[in-house]
Length: 95
Image: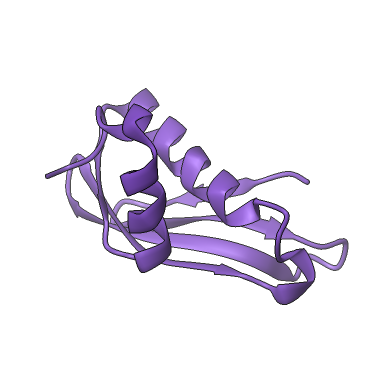
């Protein structure tokens, strides 16, 4: 399952689509400034539930932030939970 990424100057998303290009999972973010991502929402369709897709979306966001030198504000309750359970994300967590 491939995670796709779209990034614009002020926002972006990581998503997983089915063969018909319908989004089955998505994590959206906004850029609060030139180098801070605020994760707004993480939504996974129930047909993908229990497969760790939400975690993979958050991880893709963290990898992107590291590559760009960004910090992340995990406002979304799911992303915040993942950050709290993952000390390896401390380098990109904006506190």
